[in-house]
Length: 235
Image 1 (cartoon, one colour):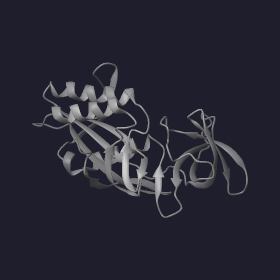
Image 2 (cartoon, rainbow, N blue to C red; image 1 turned 45 degrees about the vertical axis):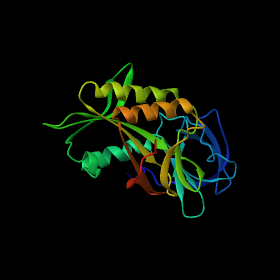
Image 3 (cartoon, one colour; image 1 turned 120 degrees about the vertical axis):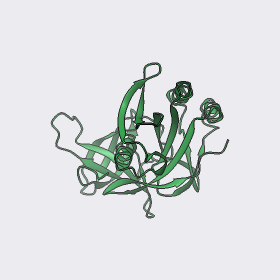
Image 4 (spheres, rainbow, N blue to C red; image 1 turned 135 degrees about the vertical axis):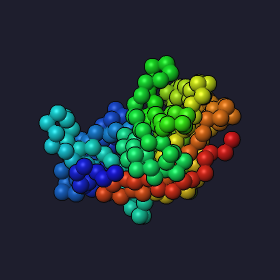
């Protein structure tokens, strides 16, 4: 998935009200960018951080920049836009480059299911059980090489795990796909200390047969693509 507009570098001044970020462009101009991330962004929103912004000229958008990446200035990047994983994954699913899901020829995003929920992707194919795929963007890293989810308490995330367990009662497959939006991690785990309820739901879902996939991403100011398969979080 390529970014629609070439990204430009800046320095973060501050993030506030969750969805706003003041930044200083390299020419000294101070602007406000949209931050498409409702999470805590632990470790990713420190003043002075090098960031990459996507400019736009859409008259319908109030803010003319979107915050897309954190540049760790050591060759590694983190993607902070939570809409990017679904866009990158949709392309991968349609191209059948995810081996575990390559047999499915129909990919439907945002399908209603459960109790007022929408599944990120519903995959179907003749003679195969449907598979419901819930996608989570993973950006937290507190130990070298270890990506964790969630970065804050997520009642919505816990609900999704419950919904996936119920899906299996219909005979369909249910899958959690954690997409690590960092280039400096090669392992994944659930952040049990941050959200014990989510961790318990994760364990219960796995025990019930919900499948778990973890993939990392290849990130640069040009775009984001699906990378390597990583081992899932241990129970």
